Length: 478
Image (tube, one colour):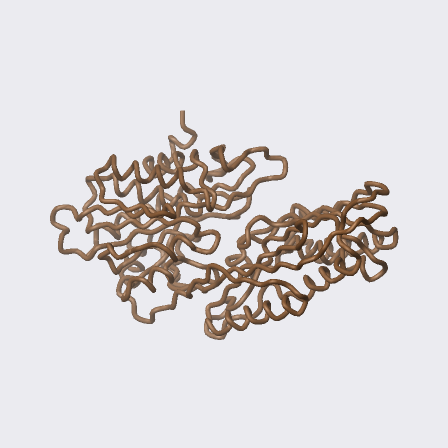
């Protein structure tokens, strides 16, 4: 029997469980996209699938609703694939192992992909329901949202007639998003030539940091495992030369790294300096990252290919010089992060160090200024710099008829007042608004916690409330 068979709404969780059985990390959406196309064919829906595997499905208005304005329902099909160190699942080929714990759906040892699989499941349940009274429904389900919203940037939406959009990519019930930051990804490459080095090889693991989403949770002050690892190395180079042999951390540029490891040829004095710095780091982050571990292992005297002492020191200095985390708070909205960046991926390759950062800002000029700063610092150290996946901010509309209507219906359905906010994380509404002049959009979703981490969980009760709410919005469309 299916794990979620007794969860309500039944059809939503039926589709969610099917989605979870199909591998769908970012850049690996072929199978889930094909599943959506098969769904459209089975339900006689007009559909479009592009070369990136974005899918659009259209269901014409039901009888008596032909004069109502078309409504766009939108979410993304890709998920962030993270797992516990002791989890052996291949997330590119295997589905998730779901379980229900205290009213929440979660996955054993991995991320759940509730962001944004539950949105896709809701959309499918709505599209299959021939009893629902509805205007023309236009379902837009994109790829690669989690790695820079590349699907939304490239998708052709010329067939869409709707100018009201309900985005289902929010994780806080009762929060109605009406604006978000723009952003981009920057890649830095520091070139070097490896040489034969010898000495005492030490392996260091910084692991079990709390991590989290680099937009929504950047304001929580959590430790970035890669910068913590570099702090250890900085303490070492203060007392003696070192030679980096390996250095790797993070898996996604938009996720705060939970684990980073390195191998280094280092003297006893350098190791003692790193151990002292480790104790200081754990004390600093005792509240935000209580499970953080920093482990040292001496692998003995070796002769290996490594980075020269001079380049190793330059790498440490480069990372120390790079900005990270919150850069500015909003002057318009109290408590909102305006501009930030996150070092998400770091890897020592054969001839260069690669690291990638996700930059965000709700002010376009501030984003450009931060991009310039990162580029200038990197080039001062002789690095190659590139920027990818730029996307615009979703600007807050002071007057929004659809938002007012959506907020009113939420109060009628739940008895609670919705909170209208803008956020620092990226939402695809900005890109879609740039393609659909006059778009009036709002973003909602059921309650989720610890997204993009193996502790991710989705509230069953909240999912039912939000699904019932979405149906009501559809039925009352004008």
